[in-house]
Amino acid sequence: QVQLVESGGGLVQAGGSLRLSCAASVSIFSINAMGWYRQAPGKQRELVAGITSSGTTNYAGSVKGRFSISRDNAKNTVYLQMNSLKPEDTAVYYCNAVDREHRGYSGQGTQVTVSS
Image 1 (spheres, one colour):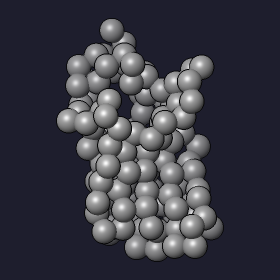
Image 2 (cartoon, rainbow, N blue to C red; image 1 turned 120 degrees about the vertical axis):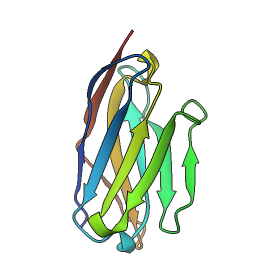
Image 3 (cartoon, rainbow, N blue to C red; image 1 turned 60 degrees about the vertical axis):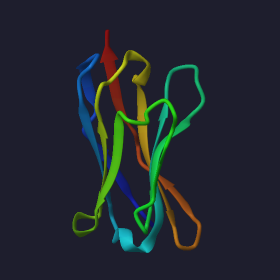
């Protein structure tokens, strides 16, 4: 069982930055991949960024060049650095993980609000 705890959300003006953190309850070496999803009101949840155990990353087209996902293996934590934020980035952001048995886990979510 993997527990994920997100932090770092908040209110920021357009053009600003935030860094989200996702702390896992187990060593992230035991996790195949981790990622950040987001869900805006009235919209479907979408993948924002992902990172595999080997460090390969992928991003949604809407955030490429603005967001960066990284991991700190020593802290069992994955980060999402969000720069040049736009009002359309407003959403609840969820951390997800898939372990080596292909079981999925999700955190409770953290709200990100970008004002114009």
